[in-house]
Image (cartoon, rainbow, N blue to C red; front, side, top):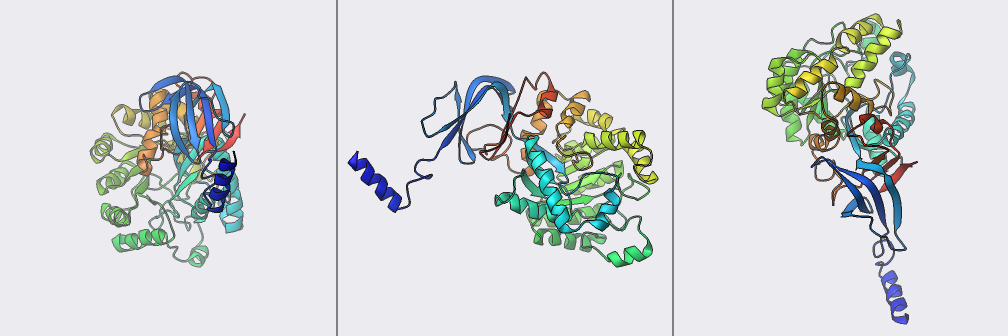
Length: 431
């Protein structure tokens, strides 16, 4: 005993004792564990977590030592932390959304975004790709990474790049005087040279990826949400510059021509893809790009426009009804044709925290529950470029864990009611 005591004192003096020498482990006893790679539900499994990683997956309920912790999930189904590849954490659609851009400052946006981030995490989404904001999204990513605020792991696109008059042009619908005061925002780019400069600007500001819009959108004040807004040459300039800087490119696109130009130019994903045609489907399969469908966004805006006249400006309501109502059918055709799908919802267009409703819309369109879950785990991890750390409950990956009641392979709606959420070894929800 004296020898052990002296040894501990020596280790402490050398800085080797404490958490590093006797790291506490957490043992998650899982009644059912979904192996997303094989598609099997494994019974009576133990996930061993040390710091932020899964260090073992063991059959049976492994006994823990006195200094370790056991989490009883023996009556739950456990699966990897979910990934949403299209969110906007800075905002949430409301009647005041248009005026908010004139009344809220960066600090207001930051406080609000922190709340939306925590809501998203507690809904079971441990990783997200934020597809465009004011730059607060990148600052929020940094704050989460430093442990200053709780939130999902964030891949930030910074500020999305748009053509003049395009979907992310903040001057759309404004008077000439207001447009003059706005000046020329750095995210507005026309022609290949400006497109290259805009990519480099987002890189300088710390973005993880580039987001562009090759067509109009639903919620902007432009009259047409489907027409192309970038040439193929402009998109290729974005893609090539981003590739040189090690950044993938996500492309907002509704109309068929804008989709096809972006696919030919080499974007990593098409987000929305509402009016995708057969030629576009063939290009998807040839290019190996990912389709991020955001069905809940289409459902949400169409339903709001139909049920609440006057909620949106007339030009927005018309686009919501014409585009939002066709997205689910388009997705069903694309999936059945073999297009690669990664899960994404456009959270912020609807209420944050309801992301998992997307699973129901995907399965309604013909995607089996297991494939929908893979879209939000294995597939999403590939799109994010980090399958080594994300997307499955496997040794060496981040300890991102969600537990639900019931069997999501039989009832996908169970994913809308997570009972337990762990991100990187830290528990954020336990009921």
